[in-house]
Length: 342
Image 1 (spheres, rainbow, N blue to C red):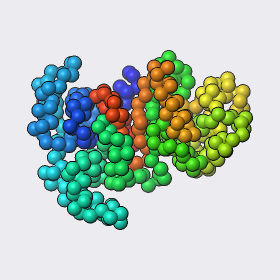
Image 2 (tube, rainbow, N blue to C red):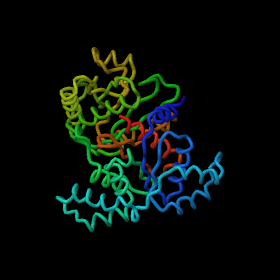
Image 3 (cartoon, one colour):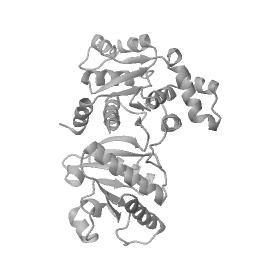
Image 4 (cartoon, helix red, strand yellow):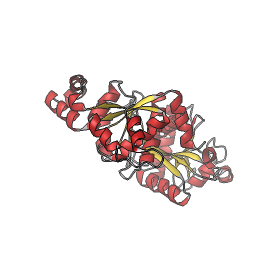
């Protein structure tokens, strides 16, 4: 099976409920149909059921006739926030969470009714849903704002960051061509402490999704002091902090990319390293290098790039690219469901 098919199979074994709030976009409706057909997650759609089913009648999914798409969507739970009996409960929850920041009942009700991201996040916070996937028609900042205000960060996490699962064809590096890249989407220029937190979170994400031991490389343009610069110092300090906070995880740095993943180069440049030459989690020193790096691999190596997947949230809420396809949404739903299991 392909990587994403393996993820779907794992998700199906312990099915979770994922909320998709952006039902005004046909890609979300199509993705819901595909998920429900494969039965690896239960789906909550936010909006009026009649309007959602009406959209399904015009869907053109290659192997699913429109009438079958409608029948599949009947399996989804459709919730209109304005008419939901949960609304009053969620208003109280929102005020309880954000009252110290000036949130009032009137403002909470307005946001929950008019911005489905907030209602979706409340479903996750209250346990009505296990995770949320959004971003097809919203900016990343909008998705994360709703998630952070209502779902919040995990108790053992000081930072919300992101990662991509990269699946590189015909490749022996990493876990037979499978690697985690972090952070490529959220943290612009992390401090040493933040970089250490990203490394630890990424190792845990790799272990929970890939079910294998992480070997985390703290990337730099320098290996073991081959270059001197403040940027190198940051990575060295981040490595020290990460090792101190999580001594059970194989973390090493600073390492150049080739020293991190190529066994012969790792043995030459970083003798005695437990990570060099076999890294499967690559932690980039800043957002520029991370974003450029994953896109280079995606385009030149024709790799599959699944993400960005958030980590450090109290429950999984994941963002989409606004250029995503329905199949992209399906893949993120599968990963979100698997995160929810863990």
